[in-house]
Image (cartoon, rainbow, N blue to C red):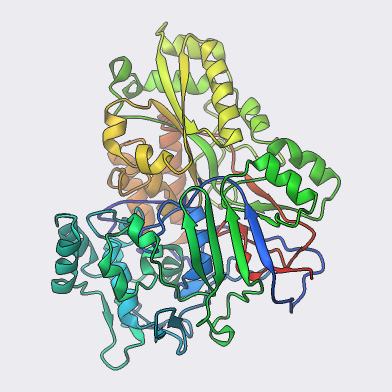
Length: 586
């Protein structure tokens, strides 16, 4: 399960003056002989392990969910599956880039005519559907984990979400609240039912990227008011405005997408929808997937979700220049080690700086890099801001030094539980390496391996689980939500800021430091790129000096496609080859 950046409630300074349109320089890879016009027809088979978090377009918030939504929901703005343009925003559901007015405080998006819901009869997607989607993302039953990253940016949204959270999470109470409350900064243009208007609290030139990055801005049909958000019932009654619709969904096992009969190619500049059907099998191990892809099995074409090429296979595939291998840069952290700052175990050991520092000095990063596939696949990272970002500054505070680790630990014999994704072979290997390394300095580590779909929803995004000591350390993953320059403050806010603590944010360690909070706040409101970078680097350095986390690498995403697949373009925002734009040999 890969995770995009999350922050938390009250992020009123998100949009300050960070000049962004879309984050970090992730390049794309395309298949040899990419054709501008492909063949229509056929069934695309995708294999892997792991399910979506929620089959709800306004609540889902991790990368597999983004890949799923690519099939059947259309954002206002999107990243195209075109080599060289995969980090360049283009209009999707919107007919054009937004109209910006009121000195950068107002953004108006007009929806394309002819984009319909696959209802009976079909009906035009309208601006009210966009507003409804944003409203329901704040629901009290299962709010979007990403909502608070932009709440403070839209006039009145923080108040709306705060009030909505207090509502009893029943269908009738949710429906009643949404009928009697509104977001002052998100409304339908009175002169055009296809135009949605967003009023911002301050200028934010990257706002179009926000609408592409967060599923909260996806349209929601009125029929969704008949189901509790993120419910199993809604998962079986999804409505599509994209190129495909969900024919069947068996959680944790399979998803079948078929062509949406009301979709029109003339209204969709992002997806070509060459194949007629997409069949996803979520029960196949990475090794088996790779074997079937290389053998060109008729029922194996692409990897599904965050399942990757087995790390042991990458060097040989790369050396042989295998045409099906794609190494897509991510500019993320995958994995990195976090500590539970609310942990009551061992007398609250992780509140002790020397304990944290001692544990980091006991870990051999070079061994973890090998666990991750070696430096080609997993370039070493010693700081929290990824290496592809301009303000990223290597920090060498923690080199492998068991003797120093023992001294810092002061003879403490700790027993720690390390949480990780059991089905992820890299995370499993890293757990074993950390277990061994720490055993050499008197620390016993036991593994808490959990299903991919559970690690965030049942553990890391549930503060009570951390506070009760269920886990002491965890392997975490984090990737940019959008792409382009100057995303560092939002990245550090998500990981470190007190206001970004789980469950609404990505500060899963429940770390809090007023100095770091202040630096991040100043970086978010900086008026120059150089000031932004300097402040971000300072925050990163302080966090690392306090051993808040242990970065390991900023990996490439290794995926593969069979020889039947053409136009295989890796799109960083979904960390996958875009299924809606590949075509198959006949």
